[in-house]
Image (cartoon, rainbow over all chains, first blue to last red):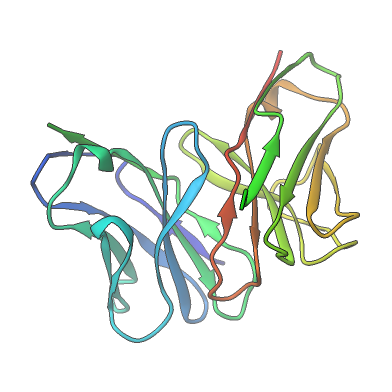
Length: 113
Length: 113
């Protein structure tokens, strides 16, 4: 069965510092991996995805994520955090042979000025 | 281009009342989904549709019904609301499965008293 774990409920970082939001996954086949962001009172917005190829994926707003097959991880990163990055971040996985997308519980990122 | 539109945005129901949530997308997407979002649990799939006239159960379908009479619309019904259905409901659409991303509406916040 597919599953996604986001081990941190909240991540706190100072503006200008690098940030990492962690995600690990479990699928039976090769994964499609996604990061979405949710701002207050809004729906989820797509940030980036890993399909195949380079393990480092670049996405919107300066975010990137590193796919690590041996550790079954897909951590979200940004070199320099902004206060405006404060939001709820969801990791999601889909088996390449399947249909349903499984979402993690979400990690709240708080960037302090 | 409006994307995915959900109505209403907010609703308060009494236990036992019924209501329908409407989702409309203008991107000609085949796939549509209904999720519920609860604190600490991420998004859970209620029902989904792979095309006009088709629907299927997701992870938490009990107490809900859906219909997709037109390709652009996906309706979620609660026949007899219960307090356990207090949640934020999100509709999403996608052009396909696999590597395709999902596009989300802004959500409907439902309280059942």
